[in-house]
Length: 242
Ligand code: ZN
Image 1: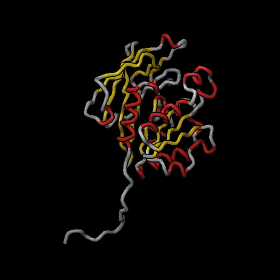
Image 2: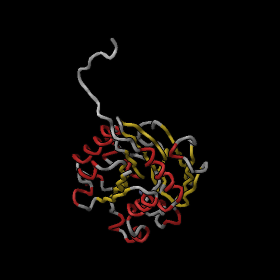
Image 3: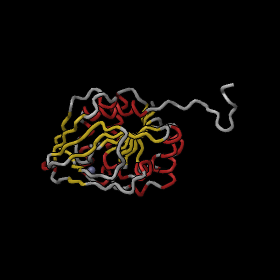
Image 4: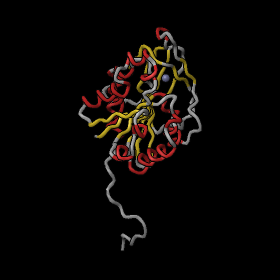
């Protein structure tokens, strides 16, 4: 499977503490565990030419993993359109991480006007919330290998309600130590493409080193993969029954 891990790479470039936590960037950390699992992985960041995603790379991507936060306007609308087209018409898998729910790409695919939600993040990090990620669909392929729950000792809080459409399948539900809850693992189908939104992954937390998080993202890539379409004849068609 050809996986492209695409990251804004803004926090890692501009903030020393984030660089210290993810010296290879979050994309580097994520790419490492996909590579170890045997996938062909390319990393891409917004500071690269063509924001890291020339059309040739997109055309050769089976599953795109997208970490996005505050730099959403750096992704031109033509690229958003191309990515959505790859998902809907070609079946490219899409894994949207953390604040990516507010990205132009996710909102276009969901028909959502905004990415509004409740949030709380703490500096210094010692007073961050604890997050318990509960598995609510134990039979789902993305939850395989995960116990009934896993705990992230420090994460940003995201709270409901959030303006996303009801997922096709809810795989995870998060509880935060401040009392809020959030739909943390949501699947959607758009045309031929499968989309997975996964909430954890705030840049100042070591979330992508967590083995359960890595298991979820490995499972999600397998789940989101759609084999290439067989050639199909459209248009006028003779009756198939005499
Ligand atoms: Zn965050």
